[in-house]
Length: 401
Image 1 (tube, rainbow, N blue to C red):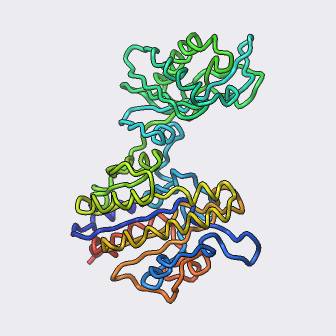
Image 2: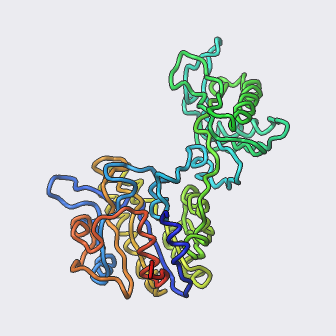
Image 3: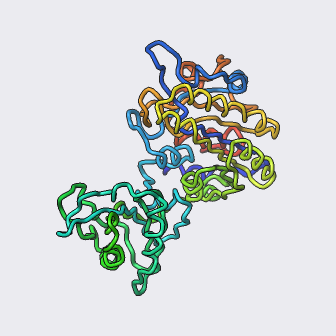
């Protein structure tokens, strides 16, 4: 029996409301040994007040020692085993620009590249061609027609774009055509199993036509195809948790990840304040709300400790607006740690805070990495957070007699 067999059997419907506020990359490290992390340095009166009422701990996004990408990090928070449910790179890229994949679609990440007169790659990214120059080229590829297959070609950024093939009998198991080297020609798409044979043939024909269309461009005279991937088959929130779930996010990738688990994307907020307004507007319509805040991650990746502190304070500032609605369960966490010290996602477990009327509060009156080490939730895998959310919302029955 896996976890979702259990939740399908035990979930109960009631009128409770759950809010999960995700500060992307929330966890951090001190600038100097013995110092405070970004979260501990930030002035966070609202989080500290919640800490006094709630229980905190550290969540491990995937497994100890594994630094996750955004996909696995969020799948864990949403209660899906990130090792069992993997989102292929092409599907993640398509999802990230807001393309809604259907079952049976195969998405591919594509990079414009530069070939010399002999057909060898001299630049794998076409000089990182600027977006305004690459978009018309991407659009020119929409003229490609292949019988029996619907084709979508969408720009991403600079040299990157997405191709989605839609049709019967397409598998996603095809090798990349990027040889990861210069001075050699691009590879042909090769199927790794019988079910993907048709996809490889379609990709080969797409590349043949693309080469003809792009041949006269000085930089982007061809492209490679990477990360072939089908739409992942994730059982939806409504089925596994009995929840009508909404996502309030600014960036397309997080909207896409939420859509893959059956959440509705609500509002078109561009700022945290607008996200809270959206929450208030849709409060009566949903049981569960995922609110995503990006900038605790991007400032960490920039290595900007002080700016991450400011963004953490901004996150803290939205909490009174959430509390006005009196949610039955409020969770504040991150999908992974992004310490400014490392300028990247890291393997460190993530401070996680849960508040409900029936949680068992621990003695802490502030929220940070150091208090979370000895918090009442202990250290746990992120995929179990949804079980805690459901139980604290009175939405889980008893297991066994």
